[in-house]
Amino acid sequence: QVQLVESGGGLVQAGGSLRLSCTASGLIFENYAMGWFRQAPGKEREFVATLSGSGMTVKYADSVSGRFIVSRENAENTVYLQMNDLKPEDTAVYSCAARPSLMPNDRPSEYTYWGQGTQVTVSS
Image 1 (cartoon, rainbow, N blue to C red):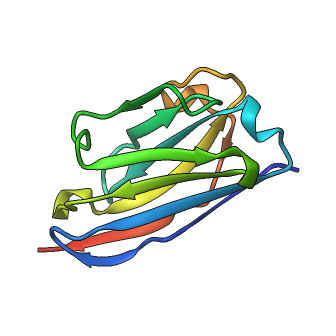
Image 2: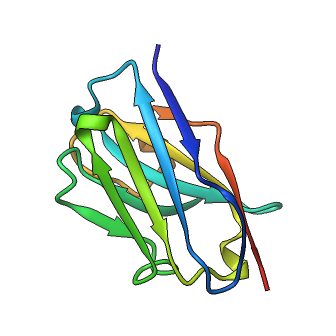
C-alpha cells in the first residue's frame, strides 16, 4: 500500500519561509517522479514544482520560480519543498504526488498517488 505523508505546513508572515516534507512508503521511490501541487479555497489545483526520479531535472511554476526549491533524498524516500519569500497568495493546501515514471510532469492527471496535503497560510 502506497502512502505519501506531508508535513511542515503552518502559519507564517509574508516574507517568511517554510520547508515542506513528503515521505513515501510502499513504492520504489527513485522510480517515481514527484510533484508538488496546491489548492486554495475556491480555486482549482495548481502545479507548483516537479522533479525527476534522480532529482536532476526540475520544473517550477512561474509563480514560485526563484522563491521555491524542490529536492529529494531517495535514501530517505522523501521529497522537500523549500518555500522562501512567501506571499499571501501562496496560501493553500499543498500536496505531494508520485508519478510512475522517471520524468517530471506538471499535470495532476499524470500522477497516481497523492498525499493528504498540508495547510500553508501566509499572513500579510
